[in-house]
Image (tube, rainbow, N blue to C red; front, top):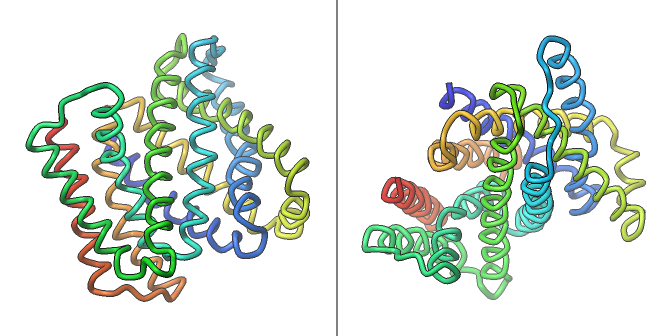
Length: 290
């Protein structure tokens, strides 16, 4: 079942990212970041209320709320960096950069926690790093390295959010995987909606007005965001994050297909080789770690 829900989540996330990417041109990066949370909350809340008619719902305690808060804030920052990267790097290339998240976590663990990398991990990190250099090194004068670093940082923050959400879901006092996932999703989206509305109201009111002018696209992105997140949460409660992250690499070819068919973005042989190395490096790292 975890394979099925992860594939559904990856497809829905690719569609949601494409919807957000299109809106970022109209309402800016922070406005496009906000819509997945603000307009995803009603759909997630409706599902939770219907599900709760037949299943008792858990009340998140302090530990669960703390982990979910970590995941929620990390996801906001990651989404903003992802959309900023897409403006200069393209849809498919940005998706490949984000998938370096396990590499970022492995290096962080080695630096901060003194975790040994070993030859297998070192080879995987070197392979993925070479892929990043291939994709970004050719246009460093036009901000290619900076954009690549933004994409990699976004991937690391998405990884941190996944760890926070998984810990928060498992910390809930009761419920099967659907109950835990729906409860955790509504909790995280409620936190993110409050934070984003406060930010837009104080620092970016033009984006808030832009969202109101694009309600149709915002609701589509919000629905896709809630749908994708619910299935990601299903995966996090059914199996390890490593399994989910490995299968999630399917997003790279999905995003490249959307990049060419929808956004008419070309890709060079150098970029294709870089994406292939990133996927190979990340897959090897997760396999060695498992």
